[in-house]
Image (cartoon, rainbow, N blue to C red; front, side):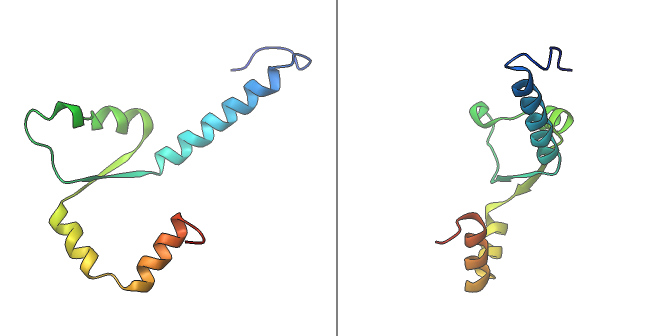
Length: 92
């Protein structure tokens, strides 16, 4: 909820901020976060509460083992790599 008067200078800035926040939350709810490899006992610096992130942000997690990633890599064709790279880095 945004309270204020439409004549106030910051009123529409607050509304724009709220709309941007809603858009970000929508994008996060459709997101998947890949976790490469696995952590070892005691690696608390890499520990994340997935349940909390899934519940509050709606992010889905995908565990990807490095040997599976390597297998997928060797099955790629150059045109697939180029198309994916261009989708992230246009003009490269």
